Amino acid sequence: MLLMSREKKLLLVYTVLVIVSLFMSMFITEKYPYKEDYVVNKRIHVIYTCGEIEPNFQEIYEQNKEIVGEFDIDTYNPLLISSNITPEDWNKIARDIGTVYSDYDAFVIVHSSNTIAYTASAISFMLENLGKPIIFTDGELLTSLIVASRYKIPEVAVVSGKDILRGCRSITLSDTKIISPNYPSLTEETSLKPSPDMMQVKFMNSKVKVVVVKVFPGIDAKFLTNIAKQTPIHGIVLELYGDGTAPIDDNFMEAIAGLVTKGVIIISVSQTPKVHRRYITNMGLLDSGVVSGGDITTPAAFGKLYYLLSSVKNKEVIEQLVKKNFRGELTN
Image (cartoon, rainbow, N blue to C red; front, side, top):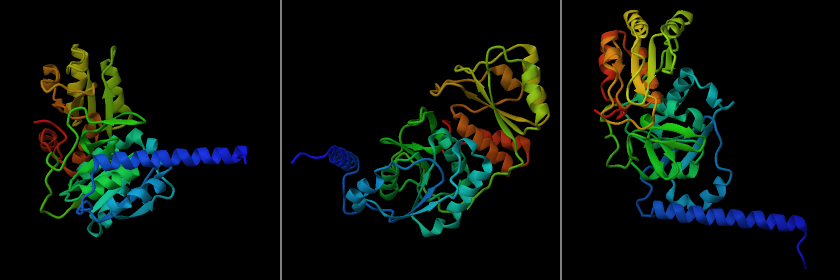
């Protein structure tokens, strides 16, 4: 008897789901071969903040649950809007992790891709003395659960496809691609070491104001001074051209020096994702008081500066701490 049109469609959908599930099982088995001691982190807490979870998660999970630790899910209601993320939202995520930190072996944070690098970077600095994995994902929940179950990586990381990226080294290229241009994928050997001290949460001060300014052809002194006039700011992440250069005219340099004199801390970073280790900030900017961020990414520089301004009052101390490697965010 011939199948009805609707039945054919259902059969086709079912077949596709089976094929996808088998493919995922083969991929997971190849990448994460099963061992008796596979699940080293047995209790995992998932915080669903925003974004979407893969639609066939349940089917794939049922076929791979023996290699995933027990987990529960705390879903924000309402979900955060990723493009509207603020430091107050980072405080909420950090607080929610800290509240139940001692009850779990690992954490998975579901977050939309467009600002995931900013949030992962910020949380990296806010959670001090980590001894457990904090895995961010833009929706690859099963893969993230496997990573959280399998690896003793005591830091904030981002799962993207087959890669485990350091959170404060990641940047978003597109809605489906997150990369770490200046640091390789993490392993237990290349990750940070667990701290013997108790984990602490350092919250962001919502009164702190940090902005990102990209150098562009034609930028002038008024552009910079007007930013400071409109809203009192405490820090600037200044994105220079790829080789570390910026306008060298006197007015621009005087505007930079004027902002520094007023107490604004300026970190220079590169506009290009891949930063050469010999990247050098323009000497005129350094002489004007700009602090070189080396190969730190814009999201990490933003989160680090926000974190330091929220925790430290002395401007000279902050400028020295900018150059210090806290979470593996820069190459010394």
